[in-house]
Length: 323
Image 1 (cartoon, helix red, strand yellow):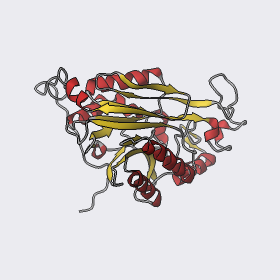
Image 2 (cartoon, rainbow, N blue to C red):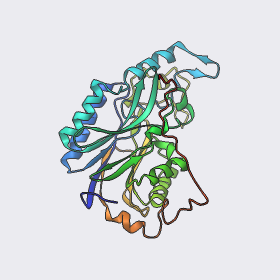
Image 3 (cartoon, one colour):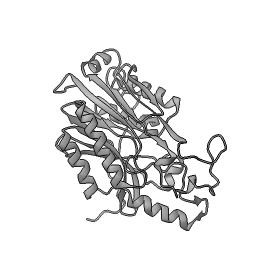
């Protein structure tokens, strides 16, 4: 582990976007980044699918063997509020990182051709893109609307603040994907998510201790009011109901957050925060990584390559090649 500084200040932004409204979500992102930058941070991390929605409780009217016109129209709205690379919206993200001189990680819904991907992008202080990682396996009903990533996105960026990489939500339950990042020497492990279960927090502590790295877990706090009033699951005529069996109200919480920051020995540097939009801060003491690896290095002193091996295909997911 080699960095230009011994202490890296980080911020996990626990907030919701203005769902399906890319322009207003970008504005909110810029304001929150400015607030974190004013606190003197080096790295700002936003949740999964912040631009510009995690489509809570909606499968776009798709069922086995059938798709409905309303769902196709809402998918088109989702597509239109997503981010292409490159695009003017992508440039705004780059300019935001450069303006505030921060490393900036943003969870986006990326549109490429006719497909949407759940993607994490990382910019350096100059606004240059360091990596783009597409979620390898969308979880459950996410597979109806998001495509799958490929091995070319398993990147770890070697930066002045350390080696930075990460996985999105339930990718973190893929042991081989974690091992790929450990082999690349990840120091600061980013875990944007939409999971607010207590077991998720336990997973973050496990990964930090297993990888002997800092883990930044960042989630949104979503309310029904964060979605358009005609968003189908929350309209009175829709069959969907709250966990209490009632019709959804504007202040009902869909995702409770639980963002946290964990040390290389699995201890909280910032404990989980629930049911509130906030920015969580922590100082990462980078020498702690070396100290933690004294007795455990998952790809070094505590590995057995003579018994276990892993091969990672780093080719892109493009299915058509022109020669």
